[in-house]
Image (cartoon, rainbow, N blue to C red; front, top):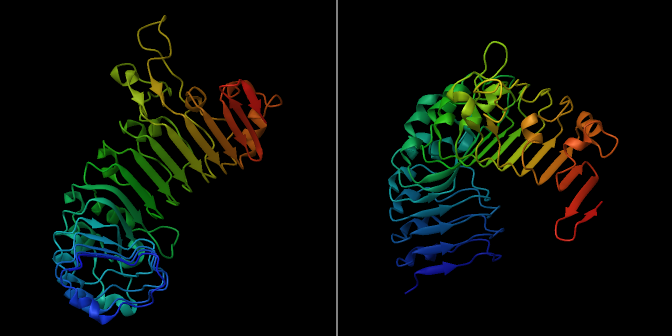
Length: 386
């Protein structure tokens, strides 16, 4: 009596119809079967199947259309495969624990066979990681997205929202769409890819347990929310945004009319208290860092340490920001161990070893990389490697 069948990495091109007779089968692993082109409908007779793995089956285009019959299925992995849509009926698999990828069908010949976002409504046991792809091409309005009720999937920890497809200058409906895709408050890792709206969703600042935030190709976003107030954020990547300033608003620090930090409790907070890694890529319009004139709290003898910014930052990468004239003060003051700067001519000129006017501001950092120039400090031996 076979309960598990592992064909992962094999050169099998098709699964015989007789597989449906293995009614005691609970686990079927077809991962990395790159030549596998189809799955038989008889697979849906596997009434005890609990896990199906077709990840990285690049030739596989479809799952069996009657997949909803697999009501005991707990884990379905399709990431890296050629699967173009999720079949209708997926909502009947209410005990599903793992669904690593949901591709929204954008019409065409598969539209009649494909599930839409609202079929995620009853799959509240989904946990771990979930990618939702083709949000631009496959969702007509925000109501479908709202019916998915992502916020009720309490076990979800990692979410990727990908707005794939052709983009015009401004996607007017994507603001309401992303608001409707509110994730659970316990989310730890969020990636937004290709979002075409002007504003990031309001719910982003409610994710107090978020540890990793990646914003890529959100090319109409000019102003960032006060991300510095996310108390558990450890890694932040900003790539290909329209942002011009990484200022007090980004840090989550209130300013008065003179551009100084307001007195009171707000001046005693820590911005980005747990951030360890900061990556800034392709912010081609960003010119300035914080631009904050820090005013002390407690009178004339007080120091400027009433507010702390990125006190745990260890690694920073800044790449292709041609207009950025200098590194923000909060980066220079951080306990950096690694600094990578590429395709930023103004920064290279300013901070280049010995020749740059502000080289001394970064010379204490053990590992520095400017384009093709690398300096590493071997901490144990005390030797420098160039």
